[in-house]
Length: 138
Image (cartoon, rainbow, N blue to C red; front, side, top):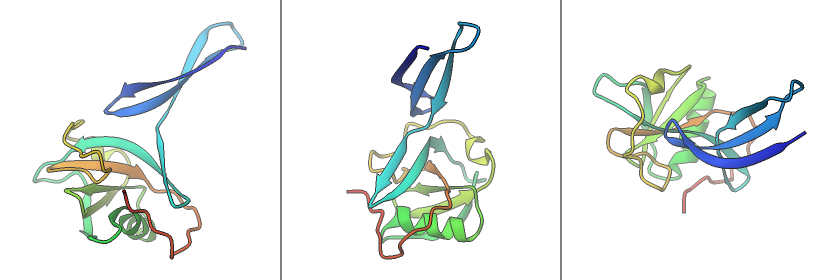
């Protein structure tokens, strides 16, 4: 069985592609989104997506301190499937693929906190977290 792994850009995010040979001898691929870890908490990035005044997601608030961690906790506690940061500290959340409604964006900053009218989107997971941990981008 052959197995090849490399990174490619798919829908505005780097994707870890696994190529493998199936039982028929044909090559198949699996695309796995990248995961970002901060102080033991793993966040699955879903890419950078455009936003507009009609909004793709619901605003949950602003978090100046530890925005990634605090937005994650707020979204998880309110039972959302995904959350995002926009403009550095704005917390947004939703379910399904609503975050994709305006298409991909290239306006997210490299710090993982989105940008102007750009959501850096993450998947909510249900890991048990230590509330004393932080998830600050450095």
